[in-house]
Length: 112
Image 1 (cartoon, rainbow, N blue to C red):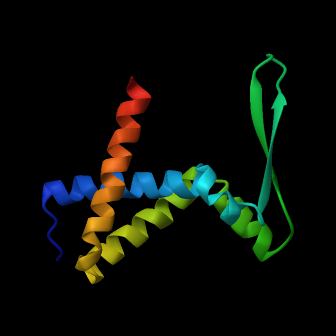
Image 2 (cartoon, rainbow, N blue to C red):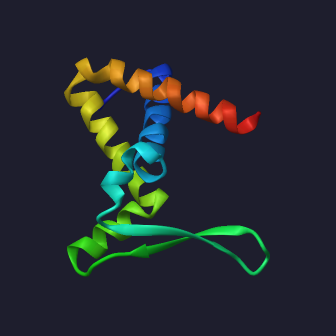
Image 3 (tube, rainbow, N blue to C red):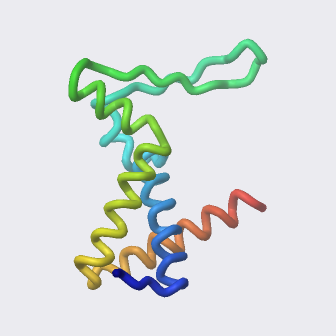
């Protein structure tokens, strides 16, 4: 069985968190999401601004759009990818460390 030290486990968690946020929400990766769905901002009934996601296309395009618009779905696939890459290619650990630091900074920023 695989053995993961607790500090590596925390790094993998934070790296998965940050990678998921990068794919689902960050402006820098909007070009990845653009072919699959459009986001518009409208004023809701309560007067607050709300994002409305319109998934484009049919078939595979619609499926990918549905996946990319779901934080939990992308989170699962990002976590799976991070864990597999961590075990198969240990040389990538510095990338995960950078993602983990960015993820921790995001958590701290959201609490301030």
